Amino acid sequence: MEKVTVEVSYTGKNYSAHIPILSGCVTTGSSLDEIRRHVKEIVSFHIEGMREDNDKYPPVFDGDYEFIYKLSTEALINEFSGIFTKSALSRVTGIDERQLWRYAAGVRHPRQKQRRRIIDGLHKLGKELLSVDV
Image (tube, rainbow, N blue to C red; front, side, top):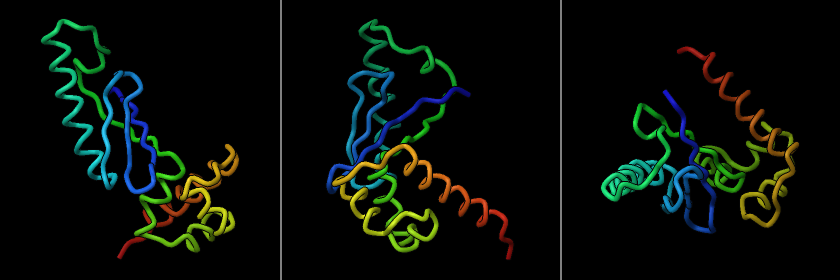
């Protein structure tokens, strides 16, 4: 199954998403779940229109594919703020809580090393949770 990247950013109070390989295919939503629903709808609609107009489109959309959501740092932190606090994220990543607030608000943008610390911290937490059995 091929993968189609959907780039998601946070724009203050909403999320926005676009598909880099499908020009003009964009959406907004108040949550990542809403973005996921919209993306499925807009891609189907967009590709259907391109087929009707005999426009060229990426061949990935003729077979089986899945969406991979690439979140900006702001989108990632804001999406999971309802699950854990900035303080908890600070403990998991080793990044100062105030700095995380700046990233979440879009006031500051993390360097690649900081983004890696956030991802590595979340992956470590995920592995720990997967190892738990009750």
